[in-house]
Image 1 (cartoon, rainbow, N blue to C red):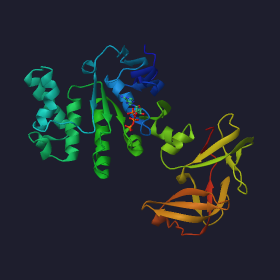
Image 2 (tube, helix red, strand yellow):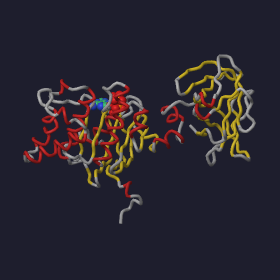
Image 3 (cartoon, rainbow, N blue to C red):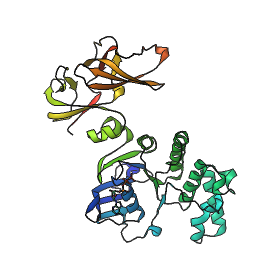
Image 4 (cartoon, rainbow, N blue to C red):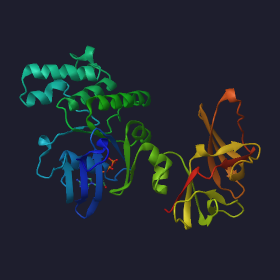
Length: 367
Ligand code: ATP
């Protein structure tokens, strides 16, 4: 009988009160985290927040100053990197230039003294997995960057690790290829059932590939949740601001019949929102631009309506982002879908517009 209720949430990795110091600098600060079996987990955060340090501790290249890291319930402290059921794929790929694609993939298996027939079968399987059949005999310089990335992936999966650590695995690819490769990565992760932990600077990438995302700051986990959870229900202005575009308004909350009311700027109507349980006093109200409707006529069906003038417009094809200036000078970002068939009218500079949103469109945050 497992202590976890959902079989998908069997922890493969557990950080228990893990701290890592370099001299008197604390890179990881008393961190607790579980990463589940077969999960695709992403670490996000600004430069220097400790993502790489966390990965290096998992791989065994760094040891925690305090606390314990368990892999499959076993304390990793005494186990050297090469004896761990983990592998790490670096951004540089580090392929051997003089070896063919197949020999690069076979390298770790040969070093382990595995019988040749078994190696050949495994290399074939890996080449099929990453769809590099016709390139098996080529050298790394004879294939494209995207193909090299796949060779590196195949090589790091050849020994069937339980955990694969990916440090900016797609950093060297251009945007389009990067987006295509994200889907391949997800596909391969699912097929192999290996737990993937990815570090990326690209928040869209993290949201695309990962089943859960951790947002870090100064060696601490600020929020760990599904991509939708992080986006829709950020627990702080830090997370709201780090992921996607957002308006953050400062105000004071007071309970009202409908939930709560936030007074926030002289001359602007109070915002009606469904605040958290006992939030009152100084708060922040965070609302995504796409949750705000822009209209020429005053809406009558929304609990929140602000009035302003179009200050700036960014046309992005499928959507337009409007910067709307309120009477107090504050700029609010609103987004609307461009859909000609609905003949939704678009706006131009200095148009008088109304911004409206429901009482569940934003989140009220203490900090
Ligand atoms: P980036 O996104 O830029 O790679 P990161 O989030 O991966 O950053 P880390 O590389 O984990 O950040 O570093 C976290 C902090 O620890 C940084 O301030 C870094 O300078 C410091 N640090 C990392 N390794 C060492 C070390 N060996 N000695 C001293 N300080 C270190």
